[in-house]
Length: 231
Image (cartoon, rainbow, N blue to C red; front, side, top):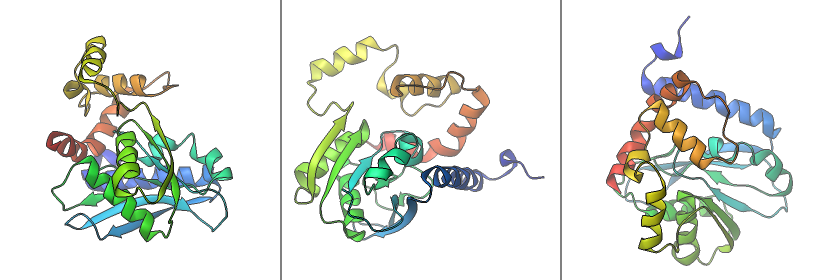
């Protein structure tokens, strides 16, 4: 029997991604499905995976933008089953996050992420939609609303995102923590990831085994490390 740990990093990552996708599809009762899009924007070969409605409907179409860490499944797993009952939900993995969203472009800016998300919605033929972004996704959502997709975005929801924070407020917030942003993101130890989960989740898991966290870091951190260091 072949164990995940015996497989090359990319192969193991894809196996885990597929397993989590199947689990989420079962919870969603086939209301959503993952779609892999090849974008025309970005100056390089760019693909973006988006969790989309499985069938047409007249429900309102919100776009959900996840934060820095994991992918759309991890961020919205507790929300998608209920939201998909009342909304025509779209939830992309941002570029360089998740197992499928990749780009050959050297760009790493919030504006680039906003352009990619806007291009994805155009390819999916959604001309008008609301946007909700959490953490890093909030910066992308704000950028879409004021620039890249200002003609398409209706209502905007930003959660735990300091788009209006002053430098003084940012310094005060950093002083309250026991580590800097550079030390916290991206996490490279089980304890670092445990700290990040507890600081970013409303109801974090009460028990997070170190070997599970280290395995997650091994298969998901490299692309995010390159992304973060280039910002």
